[in-house]
Image (cartoon, rainbow, N blue to C red; front, side, top):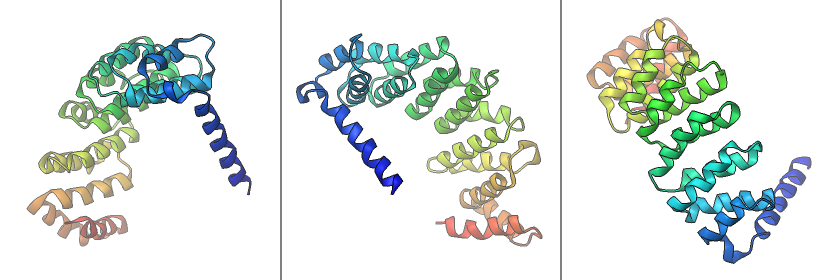
Length: 248
């Protein structure tokens, strides 16, 4: 009952916030930018404006949204990132890279996450440079984003860090999964990297890598499956059995 009440109140608040802006403004880029930049605009109006700029914004909206990335209010930063992630203009990548060079803490974490969500290879250099960041949250965000990008450069950066953290192994596994859709050979090679003890991958990740190798590895994958199904440990046998379900 309490959950339903909270959901109702949240939905009501969202609808009220959206209603504060006139319908004529909601799809007018210039007027939305005015709201974002207006000092006395309410936070609700600014959030709504950022979100709608994601749908109708052009390159003109990038600078005003980027300015909010350094806000001390997390909800405004999140709204600005949402808007930027949605704008189909390559200038967004340059703006995010610039912001990553001057921000720190939670604001920087959010920007790195947006880089991963955008999926642009231009971000790899910035993300790779943050893998060893003293702020663990920043380093973790960079790791996750590189796994989402899964470009050759992104995967190489993660491979170089295999063995340093279980999080790196998880991101590398996610990247291999993305590669499996377009480049089975490269995906199989990445899965093989994860099956070594030096990868610091958890048993669950190694089991997932085994399944991935069976699915993407062709004859070599079949040979590995035959070896795994005869193994003495339950985790390996279970992974081999699950691989059968994943094999097309």
